[in-house]
Image (cartoon, rainbow, N blue to C red):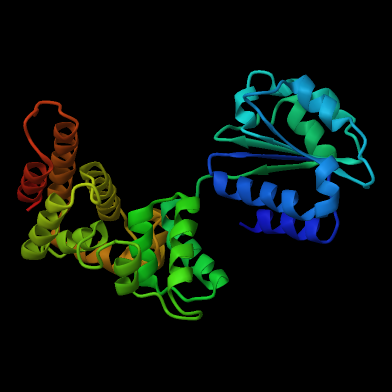
Length: 333
């Protein structure tokens, strides 16, 4: 995220703000920025007296302000980091008095995860005047593969499109989890190598042949044999292939197909933009649209909703995952 990189770049140049309010649904960038401030603003000798970590569930706004107003000892700055500040959501606006007149020798970092700061209220405006307000939203599904490729490049290896898609399908939008898995690959593989689906299968445990990415493709091609083999594998490995994830991804896929059928402009660029999918998937959508006309797509979506309820035990208490998957394939085809 460009804004996060700019914040880190400014800190590296010595451009420090008295308050950093980091909030949003995606904790990855909040942790990265706060960790960078914790490790880089003060020297190791200065940290002993001048760096403090507080936790929102254990302190009040008055405690935070009291610590922030202290003067540093034998240092130009002190750093006060408040983690889990979302526990102070009911009283967070009380910080406005300090935000209007912050201690210039203090770098106060507020980590306000999974919450939003109301931009209409005084606190947001006060912090924006002299400090930094950074929002870290969850990255959209269709942006994750490109993010993985870029993260791989920064880690010193290349990740081709197919490998990035495989990781994205399995790991979802949790950036912290993605980075953790990429770090495993970095430790196990030579620098500069191209990450293949085989590497992913061997070191992360995601099957290169039997995964939701391949299931979706097989269904779109009406390849009944391949789809059946994949769901059989899922049934034999239920912990690694939860039914709820499969049904969610297929529902998303057929919803996109329904949207595709409603488009007048079927050019690849328009399809990718309108459906908010990676251009890599356009051919897959177009193939599936030929095999599943609009009426059939609507029927499949209805079946998927029915199977989702059965998977949650509604109207079917004795069906295991293997039975659910078999019925799912029969209804789709």
